[in-house]
Image (tube, rainbow, N blue to C red):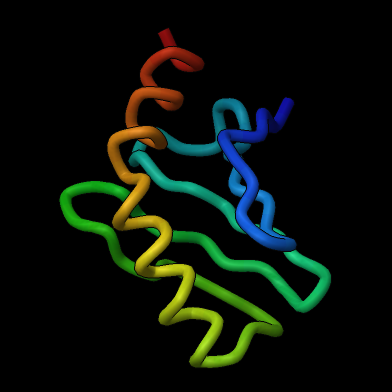
Length: 78
């Protein structure tokens, strides 16, 4: 199961159930994908197919929505 946390433009922000314990978010778009750590700080973990410009934009989106992602994570993984 991979619940969608939110969408932004053509990006889907989600996580995989029981993938790993460290809080993170996956992002998927027609151009590629990325994974960001949420804790201890927002940081790019991995990506493919996305440009530096897209990654900078996504970093800002993840930082802005970190609390929302954290809440969704805690609710889902209770």
